[in-house]
Structures are given as C-alpha cells and as structure tokens.
Length: 341
Ligand code: PEP
Ligand code: MN
Image 1 (cartoon, rainbow, N blue to C red):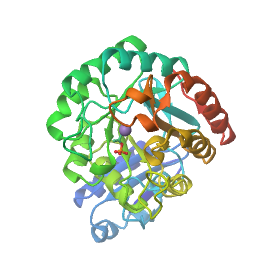
Image 2: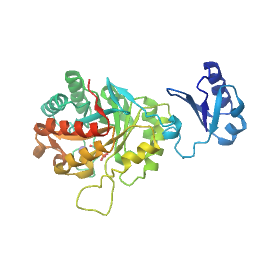
Image 3: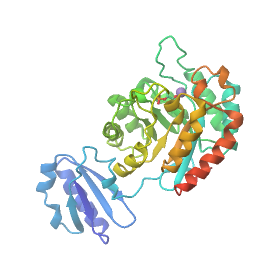
Image 4: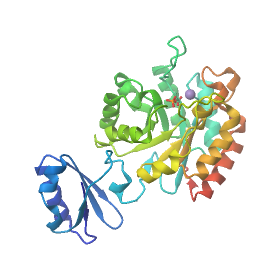
C-alpha cells in the first residue's frame, strides 16, 4: 500500500503513520518528494488496510501498489526519478553517466592507461572486472585480489569511482574495499542470496538484466536489494537472447523507456555485451542515449587484439574521446548532461 501524505503534513503526523504501519508488522518506506511525502507500507495488505489510515491526520490518500515489485515501482515515487550521487558523480534524472573500462583487469599498464584515457574523455566512472563470470571453466577467471589492488591504484591515481563485479558473497569484503558500485552480472541476476547480501552492504549496485529475464523479473531482482534498505540500484540492459544469430545478443532498447515508465530507478545500457562487436557500439550507444538512458557502460581496451577477454567488443582506447563526444551529444537530445567529477 502507498500512503500519500498531504503537502502540509507535519513530521509528527508522518511519525504517527509510520508507527501504525509498523504496529501490524509491515515495513514502512519513506520517500520524501519535493511536494509530498509518500510512505510505502510493504507487508500484508489486509493488515495495512485494516488500519484505515485514510482518516488519519495528515493523510491525503491510501492507494494500493498494483505491481508485484513495490520499492522499485515508479508509483512509489509518484513519477519522481531517483538520482544517486556516487563519488561526486550523479546518475539519474538529467544526469548521464558514461562508465568505461576494460572487461577484465589484466595488468597494471592496461588498467592505468585505460583509466587515464577514459577519464580525459569525460567518463564518470571506471569499470573493470577482477572476478569474471566465464562461460568456460577453462577460460581466464580474473586476477581476483591482485585485480582489486590494481583497480584501487587506478582509483587513487585518477579519482574515478570503480564499478566492479561481485560473483560470490565470500568475496564481498575485499571487493567492497575498492568498489563504489557493485556489478551483479547477467548470470547472477536471480541469485537471490547474493542480491540480499549486496542489499545489506549498502553499496550502490549495477544490476544487469539476465539474458532471458523479463523486465518484471529484473525489477523483482532489484526488489531483493531494495528490500534490505539499499536504495541505490541502477538497472542495466545488456542484450537478451533471441532467435537472431548475426550478433551476440539482441539489445532491447525498448527496455529503456519502458523501465523508466515502470520504475524510478536509473537505467543504463551496455552495448558491448549486447553486440559482441566493436562496430555496433557507436550506433547502439547513440540510440540508447537518445532514448533516454541514464548512462552507458562500455568496454575499452588499449589494444583489443591482445585482450584476454571480450577484445572484439571493446572500443579502442585511442578512439574513445571521439566516441564520448558523440554520446554526449546524443544524451543532450534526451535533455541530459554528462556528469563529471
Ligand atoms: C561484464 O560486464 O564484463 C559481463 C560479464 O557482463 P554480463 O554479466 O552482462 O555478461
Ligand atoms: Mn566483458
């Protein structure tokens, strides 16, 4: 249930509603908008309905949240967009974040060189995996702790927030030491114990859509994180499986405006993993930005021919600045500005 307070409701009236919601074992989620405060009561609907809060002082109306996802629903924020501040950069609303870096951390030179190039070109955050989900168990699995150390060095030197993947809760502590955003990969989108754990960590999360997940399943996955009190979830469309074999996955660009209708959470697009091909990254990025995406996460490598993984879908570092300038223009079409330090 969603309890919409009157614009002039006092703090005392809000506290009173919160206490009553909690008294029936429901969780109360307060969302203070510019005009009104909305209280999401998450729990047994019957119990909350029996409180008859419509007549309570300061309450304007009580409306059911019709979707199965509650905390991520656009309804909870009455249409207001969530904007997160991460290491001095903003994402959501009118703020567009370009997140760039290699698929995986390979070496000190590779990480520092890529970080320098993407920072100079206006990227907001740096991506790079130390733990990699690989289709083959015989493939390179990431540098692990050594990779985290190199990411920490890049962060220290260039000051960019770090986006890095967490695959296993057992690695949470060391990963949290360097991560500003925990990436949950497509393959782990429905790993519910992992989702709850990153929810409890309080660290912002970039949640990738599973390649056969519906948007509702993606939002239910986000709900697992939000339910633990972590409000900073960024949704990521990264391509889904279809019958088409001409490219790696099919980028579902319709997911951008539709997710933004369904949810208040920021939505970013990953053209690298969708396409699997460098030549498609630019057109897909421009389309995503113009469609209103709140950011792009893209792979970049100083020498893609020698990359350990995902080289064919990485932008060349020496072409990145030109690419970033084009994306900035496309984002402007949708009324967004690049976020910088
Ligand atoms: C990645 O970002 O490098 C990655 C493995 O992504 P996904 O989980 O979308 O496949
Ligand atoms: Mn990759």
